[in-house]
Length: 135
Image (tube, rainbow, N blue to C red; front, side):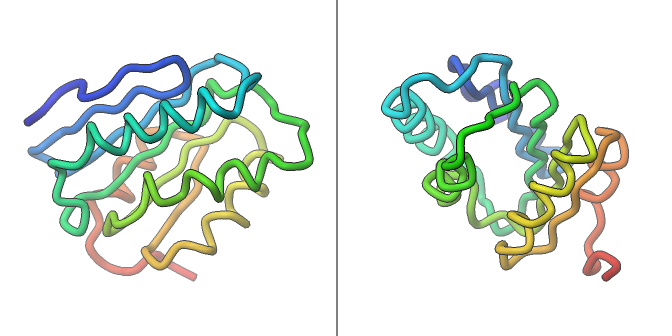
């Protein structure tokens, strides 16, 4: 299993078996209907079931996501956290300093090592590491 595993309105996902890397990319589509997002994230999780998550890393690229000013934006991420759970390491790529601050706070809730980056190349390097990230 490799290549593009899922393409939806809000998310796409691929898997690179050589690097044991699941890559998630958020689209530019704004969240208007939470039910549509819920359905898509469930389908995304199902598409990634064959990936042995405990041996793979996840790179989650959020740079294209539109700003979500809703007060419940963090709650939406929390609702979908299980769809992205179980990887041995996480790298999240953001576009802005505010995004880095917000995502860093959410990333602290994961049990696995997680890093937040502006540069996707740095995020990929982080995913290839096996030791714990620096504090």
